[in-house]
Length: 98
Image (tube, rainbow, N blue to C red):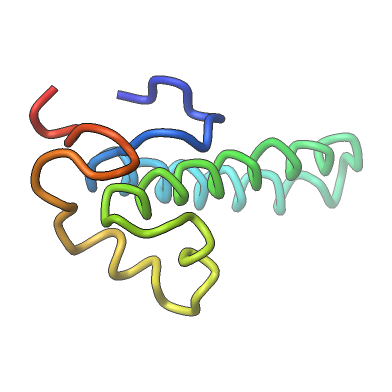
């Protein structure tokens, strides 16, 4: 789990994506709360946004879609709750079978 978290290639399971959203949300709360006192912490937004988009792209790949689909409003709900493609697709092998 969390192999190459900043890579946009490959596929990930729902569990890893759900944990990614949880980590992102917690870090967003922490940075937002603490950045009022310390502006240096605001620089952490950049890797955090890169992290959530790279993991989202991999989850889209598991559904057989390209990563741009994650920009559709509320598509994140579909990514969290629906299963990925069975077997291999053009983005790689099924992460469930690894």
